Image 1 (cartoon, rainbow, N blue to C red):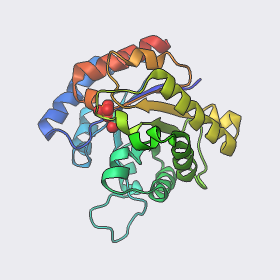
Image 2 (cartoon, rainbow, N blue to C red):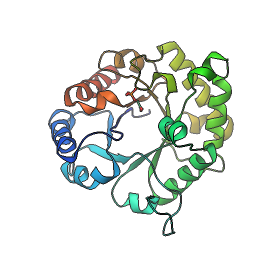
Image 3 (cartoon, rainbow, N blue to C red):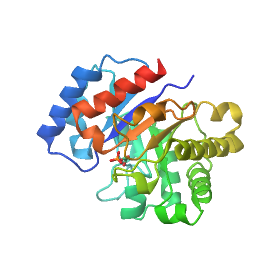
Length: 252
Ligand code: PGA
């Protein structure tokens, strides 16, 4: 049995007071919900405060990126060992990192390894652009990003991957459930090729891209989809809470 996950990616949004209010509101609404792992990923500078706001709750905190080295001259970066003191999870290879900041598959792979070594749980993101989809390259891109990201990685049970088609992120147009299911099945098959069926059966693969309280139900109804990585809708207490509540209801 794979425990589903609903993770909120707060990206570069909000001032500290708003982020704090959001955390306090979520504590009230979703702390008591069982059967779903709940994660919020604030901006680096907000992590310590949000961590305090959510102490002793069931809502976990994650980071949005990580550097692959510790204790080196890397101005502006934050290492996995530093992050591990504060958070449990880290998003790696988000499409905005890949496409706005030129992050490569190789960098993703280094970050995954460094995070696991430090005791963090990576949420490794993969996904094709619209152009890649339209030119029939979706499978090729997903296989490349998955296998390269996991190269020489000793993958623990329950490892988390997020399938996020770039064209669905922040656009209001989510993938169809059929497309998401197909992509996620392909990713799981790739993982099975590397690590075997049993290990692949434990990997949590989330869908991300314009997830809302309205469309979460159909995604959660698919066995192979183990939850969601949520951007825009994670910035509102009510929307994110409804997504968590619905995910728990569908899977209970
Ligand atoms: P969105 O973002 O829910 O706003 O589409 C998803 C993501 O970037 O993880």
